[in-house]
Amino acid sequence: MELEFYKYQGTGNDFIIIDNRSKTFPKNNTDIIAKLCNRHFGIGADGLILLEEDTNTNFKMVYYNSDGNESTMCGNGGRCIVAFAHKLGLFETNTTFIAIDGLHHASISNNIVSLQMIDVNEVKIFNDYVFTNTGSPHHVQLVKNLADYDVFSNGRKIRNEVYNAEGSNVNFVEQINHNTFKVRTYERGVEDETLACGTGVTAVAIAMHATKKTDRTSIVLPVEGGTLEVSFNEQNGNYTDVFLKGPATFVFKGKINF
Image (cartoon, rainbow, N blue to C red; front, side):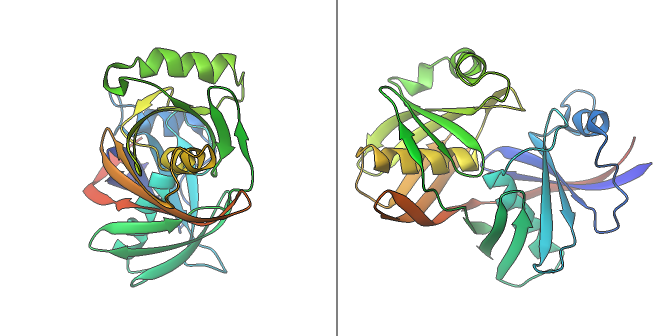
C-alpha cells in the first residue's frame, strides 16, 4: 500500500501526519505505526497523527505514540495538526477540533499556533515533585544543573517504578528567572527524552504556579528544541483558559510503500 504523509515538527517534537478523511489508513495495526515512526527502518517520528472528519468541528485528531499505541493528548502534536489543517485549507485563522481529551480551540498566525488545552482542576503536590494531568499525565520535578542531568535514566526509573505499567511522562525543571523555566522531558510511549513536550511544559507552568515558584500567569519555557509559552487563568486552584503557544513547522511531504 502506498501512503502519502506529511512531516511536521514543533520545537523539535516531530510527527508523521496523515490525511485520513478517506478512512483508508490501517489505524489498528500497531506494528505498521511503530515501523513508520522508527528512525532506522521507517520515516522516523515521535508520534503519528491522523486527521479525520468530525461532524461538529473542523477535524478530528487521532494520536499514536511511536510505539504504535493510541495515546492521550499531545500538545505539540495538536499544534502541528492545526498547522496541517490550515495547509489543507480547512480553516483560515481560528479552528476547533476534537481529540481524545475533548474539544480544542486554536489559532494560527505566521506558523505560530496557539492551542487551548484542557482545564486543570487537580494539582497533586508532594515533597519533591508535583503530579497533574494536562491531557496526559505528568510528573514535574525541580533539579539543579539541568543541562548535565541524566534525563533518560532518571526519567525511565520514575516512569516505571513510581507509576508502574500505566506510566507517566516525567519533566525535569530548572528555574531561570521569575517566569522562565527550562524543561527536559522523558516521554512514555516514546520511552526516551524528546526535544519538547507540549502537555509537559503546560504541566510545568501550572505546577510552578501551584507551588508558588512564580506568581505569573504567562510562563516562558525553553526546551531542547526551542521555546514554548503557556498562559492561563487561575482561581482557587482551578486553571482555565490554558493556552500552549509556539511554532509548528512543515518539514517535508512524501510517499512510502508499506
